[in-house]
Image (tube, rainbow, N blue to C red; front, side, top):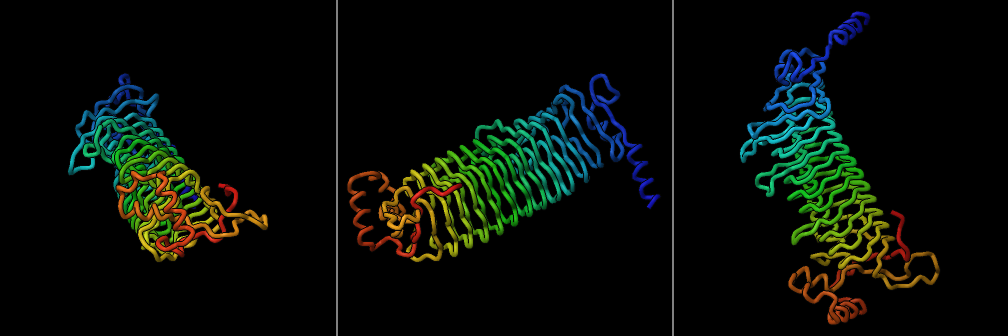
Length: 407
């Protein structure tokens, strides 16, 4: 045991700081890395460094002082990391190459564990930060700003592929193809990020189980978030706002099972949540406000629960494409509910059916939207509610709330 601690102490003592800058021995970042030993700290002074594909293949810390700039000049990647326990902090990285075959990135981590990427700004990078086949990483307090004007020349802001236990916190991502993209990424935490004005999705992931999303904001994207072919997903207290478009939605759940959607805010979106082939989803205490469609629930969904949500000022509260359902609504607040509460327990005495006849017609004939808010539609919906014949009889809230639920 004494020998073990003696070795650790000697490694700590031997680690050194290596300065890089115009007045230093090393004026080139790659040269300093090549000369470094395991555990060394390379401190890069303020300035512009015209370097590309800086390779880190040993355990070091690369620290920028006063935000030095690495200008890749559209030649390749910015920094490649192929070693464990590496830290990158405090750089401006810009102008990577672009391509249809290679995923050029500002910072690329490949088969490296315990890597931390913090407090960097990436501008005009094809992909921003990419982790591949890596574990136990941290990506935090970065600004990732794309400058291309179309998605064909833009990659993803943060991308994980075949990763585990990666934490993504307090980042700002904008003007990329997808703000955050996962594929085969498990047990990852995504917290306090702002993803906005991305061409396609603010968040997009597939085949990624047991991931946790907390207090993120996805706004003004082509689509807020698309979650596909995954299990055991938790989305808590996120905001989905101003995601508009002909085929846009705040949150798509495609072939998802055993998920939790709690405390989120869906405001001013074309569609709040679209569930397609998704089963055993718990949707509780969310706010659906001022959306075109608050909720689209496809007939291929089973055993989903919608409990204590608030539906306020939506054009359509719920829309569907079938007649037979095995999902459950209870204690939601519906601003269109006009029932009564004779026993004063704050629960409506008659059920509320959130699917209108008009929403069914629009689902089948989209051009019927031109009749929105017309007198004919109002009369048709009221007649259908008195004598239901087409709206799904099982899709109803038997105990609607008379007052808004606490979100």
